[in-house]
Length: 148
Image (cartoon, rainbow, N blue to C red; front, side):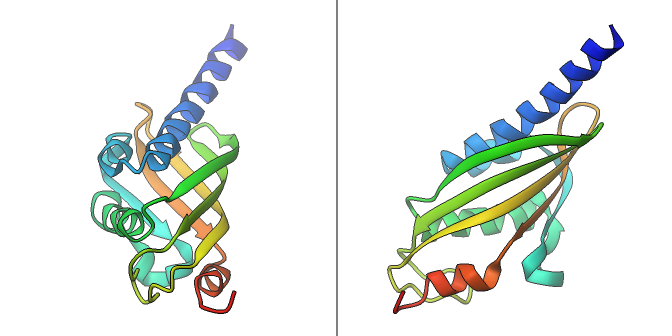
């Protein structure tokens, strides 16, 4: 019985993360946030200290900016694996075509296709408490530059 309960818990954790990624695919930031603890934190690792903050503040601002700058933004969830009792790691490919400036990246009308790792830490109530996101930022910027 314990094994079944553990499997259900793992599945429930994964489902919360899959639903978050599906909301991201739908470009629905409010729905993404609904899966998160309002006090939750986020770390966009390639951005260093500037990439650390609250999900409802920094996360919301970055995801909103991405969606506005890449109106066809899409993602493919390649894998979701529970790494412990409240952590799920997701391999995701994110892609889109830029239509306006984003952060320090001028709009050149180019597209990107980038592997991302999302590591979600969830509460006992399956709310996302922390998201750690990593990707090759230099490659992301290179893909969006003219001459690709």
